[in-house]
Image (cartoon, rainbow, N blue to C red; front, side, top):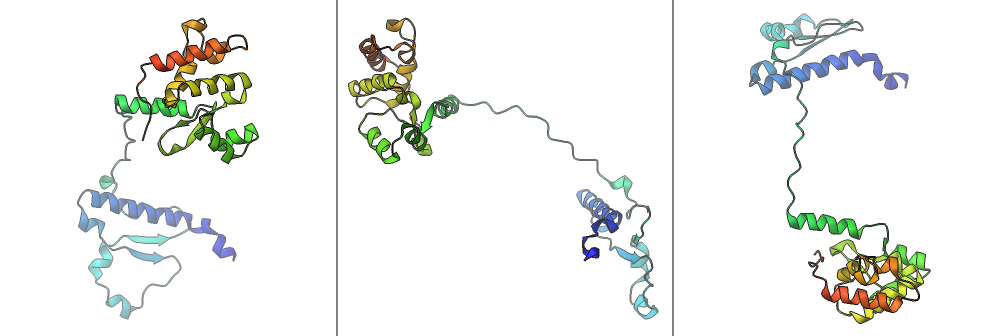
Length: 233
């Protein structure tokens, strides 16, 4: 068992073997196929040479032309004296400028960033925080009581604004007044600074006393807003 785990005993020999293989690859790279294919004769220290009758069957020229792998515990010369044939290390690739993004790609990346914002929660996470079942949250979304964002096959996300009663009432009222509107347009109208609310967004400015005013301001922004469609297939 100790011999199986003593991998460092022949580490120098293995290094020389890999150097020989690397030299051959360099020669192949330079179309030196004959030199790279030269057979390798192995001679182990302390192991007797081949018997005369076996040695006779091996062509002397092949043995003479073959490099010798002498397995010793000391330092030894490289197997293949082909330093002139060795290629330099492959230089690292030069840093290339990222490809220019098209307007569509840029808009999509911005959309994904907004969709994955921390306040936009997956349905399961929102249901857990709201203390409701995921099935109930899905029903509320279909009924138009919750604002839900969709991006292709990435599922739905619900803003955590619904967890605050006043903001929840604001969003529900806007959804009811703008049925059929793009949820993304409603989402952006809620975040847009509105002149009617002192250049603040409805989410920041809404209070119990100006709730109706905030609802009408957001609804007007949804109808008057000229935002491109944000749906991504």
